Image (cartoon, rainbow, N blue to C red):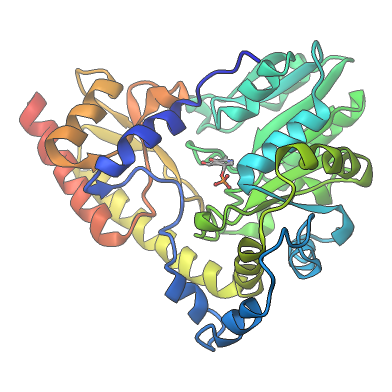
Length: 373
Ligand SMILES: Cc1ncc(COP(=O)(O)O)c(C=O)c1O
């Protein structure tokens, strides 16, 4: 298989451990195990008590019934049987795309956004058309462009709600139009919802609550602050779930007993996690807004309830070279925009711990002015 390197992952794999101040990540400040155990107000006694009795075998292959029920509860009308546990959002996208895409089929993918959503179908032999989103529209997708791209043989439309790194949110009315376009040619719609907006969630609807041929992928890694669980899921109709069941035996078997218990515990206490994370989003966005107002070399379209963002940098150096110099000279980590095909800027993971964000931004300003003014 001829498959491209994922730009952002390759960059982070190589450089994230060199960072002194990491303001590059897309997760909302990760929870410690201690904080996770405290979520239920019992200090995790029951969590470890239950776990100590469990055999460390493969566990429930599709995810425990408790996990599947917790996930089903996130949607309006989902049968837990059609929920499949996956190795993170990564495994969810891999298995869903492999279950749908065949060599030569036509796929439309939102672009630029999270690279596997277009380069994985391409690696599997699909003909992929990019559905471009534009800065002058505030990065919102144009539905008339999707109508132009769709063909009678379109098999899959891949979208990211909200998008990494731009923070683009697709609200329910736009999503309904996407569904109508897909329905007109009987195409599947894969919606990666790992960044489902935490603010005004009622303005958005999961694809699986709108369309029978919709598949949503999600995980504990971003909105829920526990990427260590390496636990995600797909929700789809039975036909697609059955196809993914076959693939899962090749790609993963199960997520493991510990990860299932951890993920279930976090989902059970979801309200507390979301309350914490909303506070982080709002407070940190304000810090960045104030910084942007005073920083002529940076600008952004502030994201709504989403933990990732893209900032434009007005500097006379390419973004990759600049981010590497910044890291080596100051220890501050940003992801170059070019890693998302968005040159002249960087991904700012503004939901980092507040002290890191403040210090990282302050160093970034001083560094740009010393270097370029
Ligand atoms: C849009 C999107 N989907 C999926 C993933 C994969 O996340 P994970 O496998 O950690 O759940 C990422 C990771 O950055 C992402 O940005």
